[in-house]
Structures are given as structure tokens and as C-alpha cells.
Image 1 (cartoon, rainbow, N blue to C red):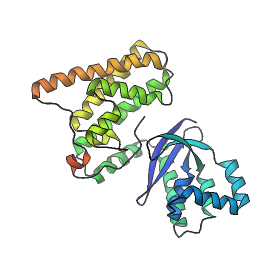
Image 2: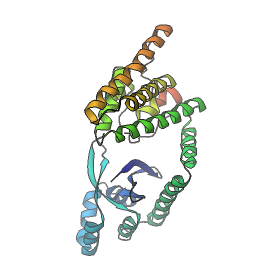
Image 3: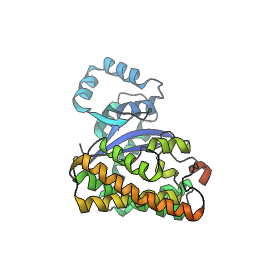
Image 4: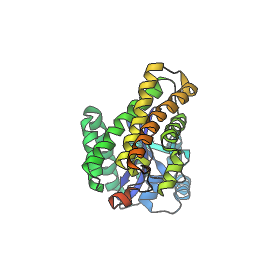
Length: 280
């Protein structure tokens, strides 16, 4: 399943979702939905009792709910039971909750927005800008961040073209990040005091610009040398990161200080950035 992973917010609750490019539909984490609707501290046990109570539901879920890889609360990727919108609606029917109808409307809205964005990609861009404005980021920072998203998409498309897949995306990202910043993505997050947050949402404009330069360089180098597969792409990723490392050293020489900072969104912009799944 060619997919795009994301967190969706229902009120202040987070629902893990995966967009299937082939089927053009969202898959929602079944356990996340149950937790939101029931406020259960153990949604796994709640769902187990539901299926035991309703054999028809158990059979339906077994037939229609695939195991889809999603990020867990511990930051690990694990396969979890997921269902597309019609399947989740069927599960909701078995849950006595005042939130059921508002949740159905929310799911329909999520699906509608995605279809709208496919037909008019500018809508996705507009929502991205509005999203960061609501969080209090400056227009200059937002422009830098959105450019970085375009660059990142071009890079991952190039990786995919040359045979990169799965966890290899994260490994190549670590190589690039470590080459220009001196830290892996995890180490960089720790340095800024982050856990599950998206590192890019906590970078300064300078950090973001250097990261973008590294990814642009990696993309163009890959297009020029045409590496085949993950092993050859690791060399290209390292070369791309070195381009930004050279720029960083020159800038720091002129400034007389490091451009890598412990500051995060809270210290920079006075707010907590949302905890989201990192871009692959």
C-alpha cells in the first residue's frame, strides 16, 4: 500500500491515519477511534469485549480491517488494526457514545478535504499556511517551512525512483542530518528537548535553510549520478549533507557562533508545536 501517514485531530484527541494512494481513501486506527469515543484507558480490552459480545462484528472486523503500519506512542512503527471510513462507521454503531455522530461528521470532513486537495493541490498549501499561522509562526518562517516541504517531497520522490523504501527513508534522512548538523535526527531532537515532535517544526529559519540546502543538494546529485538502490543512495546523501555542512561552517565563521541551537518552538515562538509524525 503506497501511503501517506498523518495524525488527525478530533477536538484535542489524536487519531492515527494512513492515506492509501491506490484506493484513494483514509484508513483510521481502530483502537484510536475506540479510545476517543469511549475515553477508555484500555481500548484494546474494550474492543476485545465488543467482539466477544458481538460475533457478527468480530467476523466483520476480521474480514475488513487490515493490519496497517503506524507509529506508536513509543515512537516505534507497528502494525495496527485499521479500517476505512465505512468500516469505522460499522464499529461506531456498536459503541454507545454521545460523540458518535460528531465523530462521523468529522471523518467525512477529513475524507472530503483530502479529495478536494487531490483535485486542487493549492488547497493543501493554503491549509498548511493557515495551520502554522494559527500556531503563531512568523510569515517568514512559514515561507521557509513550506519551501522545505516541497524540497523534501522532491527528495523522497527521487529516493523512491531509485529503489529506496520503508525504513530506508529514515536512515538516509539521518545520514543527511548528521552530515550537516553533526547529529542524527534523534540526537538533534534530544538537543532541543523534543520527544515525538516533528524536528522541522522546531528549527530556526537558519537551521531550516541549511537542512533544505542539504536536501536540494542530495536530490540534484542523485539525479545526476543516478544511484541504484539504498546502498548507493547513502553515498549521495552524505555528499548532499556535506554541501550544507560547508555552508554552515562558513556562516558560523562569519557570525562567530554556532547556528545549531537548543531553542525549539516554545522558546522561539512562545508555544508548543503539535506532536506529529515526522516526515519520512
